[in-house]
Image 1 (tube, one colour):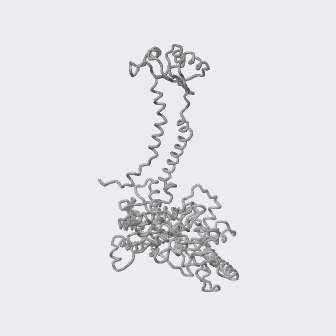
Image 2 (cartoon, rainbow, N blue to C red):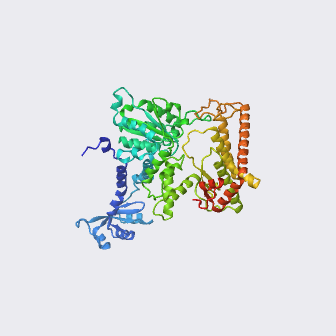
Image 3 (cartoon, rainbow, N blue to C red):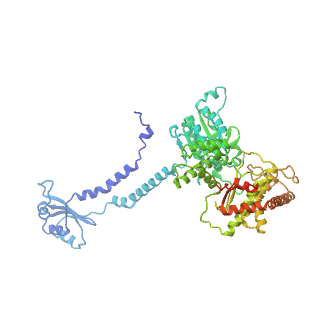
Length: 622
């Protein structure tokens, strides 16, 4: 057996022993008084008349003294003296208000004395016991706070959750769809397991690794996989856990975190949501957050001071790298920037296969098709799709999850839950059918628009009374000007269809107008695709700007007016273009709207058959 450290052997608190000792002092007089035989006051008066009492002590609430043993046996037959030879026995009696007592004692020449209350008992009742109770309450209060997060006495302690290697079951084979990021982080594992392989040639291990990517792409999962592969302790905490209302607490927690990590080396420190802690200093022109800036300064100091060759790797994750302080990102601090991007179609299929191993799939499920129908989805979204599909199948009592369940799950993730309680009037349903048919018809007729997968007028989400689902045929990373213009035209398709059929407009196109205007403005000021404005980017750079930096609008009012004019001009041209296109195919528009109004859901193939003039009675909505 190992010996207990000295600071643990003598770490027993003394306050319980002090309370025990004071409690014994408090109850000792009562224990002593209980050991004396107690008689009635009338029996005491009778003993006085018979001369059977001596040495009487008068207290404020009681009378005590010695009484003749034979007299005591007569009034208390059950009394048995400890020593049969004793003539006198101690006694006590409750005192009553008796003005004649003193005269009666003097008449029988009985010696008496007054006994005041103990000064110690008064002190104990007035001061010591209340103070001890307050100290006990204080101790219990902060003991509970300490278990919850360090307590006030341990407020400077880092709140990192520490996982040892046996508590981290995640490995690189549990991560899918982000192979490039995994390949970069395998080197970090080598740093931790074989540091001599890199330091023998004079190399220095990286001080920090920053994982950058959209939410839900698996940054935290990657960090845990690194710790699991390296089999080292893993200190995990969020950037917001450093900052408190007390100035200096965050800096103390940073110091304590690095001290713990140095004692546990080799290990990994992982700070999630680094932007909560590492936001650029001086961003707030109205006033700085002194506590947060002190915490950031301490983090920078610790990163400069600790020796990475001891095997301590600092990892952090953020989805807002543009607002981080430049001092954090320089060489010697976060040396490695690993981009954890959205997966492509192959990556999405790998993620689906990873999560589908825990789901009972029906024979018609094609994960490759699901991956193609979920462009832009991250790992968290795909896991949610599989979970929603399993829940839908279980709700329907199915033995396995079918492709239809996953299709519905994708629509639920994209558009929200079906609002069955939202009842549209016949007029609203009629208008919604033409609105969505306008979107779908424009997407089918325009050359560069994404293919239509499904059209529906079933209300979903917060405000959508219908939707047109388009799925790209292939992964796209850049878009040309004609492709952007066709996408804007599709956004205007619903409004144009309403104007053609009803001769007026409604509020149903509000969201379409907002998105179309935003895309048109980006085309002008961000992508430089305007012949009038020229190849100039007028949009502000997505970087941190200090209060002393110029305002984002780095152009004159004349240019701003010209931008507004060009946005309005191009918007009107595109709207007129799609309006004329739908007018030329108005019969197909009306036929598609009638089918949609009757069935509420129409798939893309049925819509294309109507536009192309193919009559196929077997085509039904899915």
